[in-house]
Length: 388
Ligand code: FEO
Image 1 (cartoon, rainbow, N blue to C red):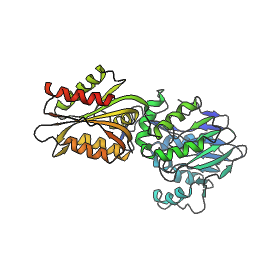
Image 2 (spheres, rainbow, N blue to C red):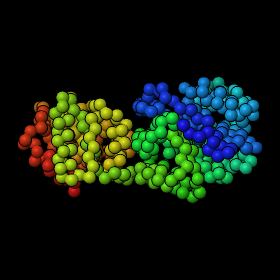
Image 3 (cartoon, rainbow, N blue to C red):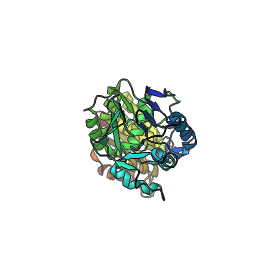
Image 4 (cartoon, rainbow, N blue to C red):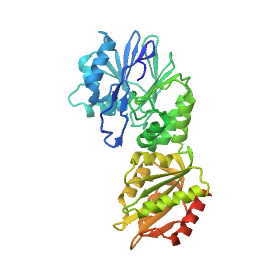
């Protein structure tokens, strides 16, 4: 659990969600997720984002307790997605004098989420470079469009040098679980923000102009030390650069024949000295982790059965995920399986060709139903080409 005091006047007032089944109705979160919210106490009091309505029964009493009878002056809304903003109307109802501070785009979107709520006289819009003085503390705002939605802003508290980074630097996993940051932050990044590398780069350039002592994201731990490590990983990820030198084999197998070939290929690659080889079963393993691994590693091999004149759907689903997440700059090998008319390779190739800077290995492998001794030469050739 995080310490409530980030500094003597900035408090963490977020909540853990340990019983959500799927984050965004699509991502497993075995260790839950945190919805972070903060309170800045000065001459003026600012609430920094609300939390998901799922945890309103926890957050609203916590807010009330920390306010200790005082009225908040501002509710800063960095991001309007409901996991952070769904209690805005509730805050207005409890504290009618509070001013919502947010981007112009968010102000226009607010009524979409809260039918019947009058926002006419309670919203202050801020744009790039605007400031909000709370007394000793001064918030400076920066636009961060598409990190992760178009209305996103981040803020920098100049006195204590704290960045409130919205979804940026977020991580799956409730704060009660003390776990490695990079693994679940990477799975979060590529699946939530992966498409928007250019926009994340733009935000990193803005952050590079600031003296940052602490990053307060909307999910996951508050980052206070070794900030260069986290910023360096974000720089690598948002440039779509290789983080780990190695080959990721993703397979979609119906009756085990393609799985056996994928595992044999992994064995061949290891025997030839591949720096790292990891294998995922797209039918059973977590799709979000497979997406993460594709971006993380330097090379990718796709192995799939043919199906209904195309490719077996779990592979199609994986490639669709890579397409929409802007997968790029990688070398990819193809192994297909088919019992009468192998066609998975053609579909995989065509989907890969829609992606940017993808080099498809000239050596591909076609097996018929089951890998046989006669297939090994083609598999060796594909392995050799992937290791070049
Ligand atoms: Fe955590 Fe894009 O909301």
